[in-house]
Length: 114
Image 1 (cartoon, rainbow, N blue to C red):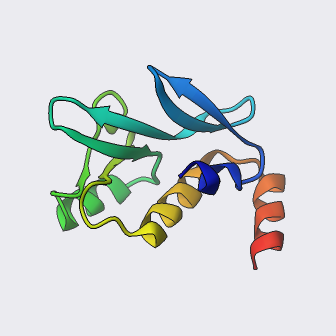
Image 2 (image 1 turned 90 degrees about the vertical axis):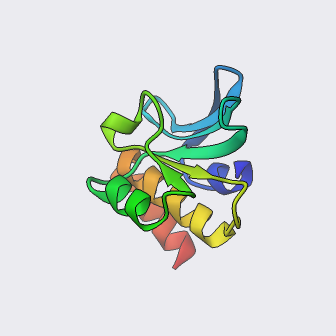
């Protein structure tokens, strides 16, 4: 996950409560890795567009959830211990990044990727 996030332009790693997170330099965070001692799993928390959280949780409630604290703001939790699909993880991180990245960084990423 670190490699995926740090390949996104202007992204830096920041630690939050001892766990890694990723943010745009001088801007908002878009991804956190969290360990839930209560539920005994590791999950990716990511920023999502309006309505995405509800859709994902409804489609697969064993895998997706509304995380504490950030869930009311639309963030999505994705359990990483259930049938991990790296394409799905990459897509979630890229979409979360696009929500906070400057237009110039998005263009740079698209020019390099497509």
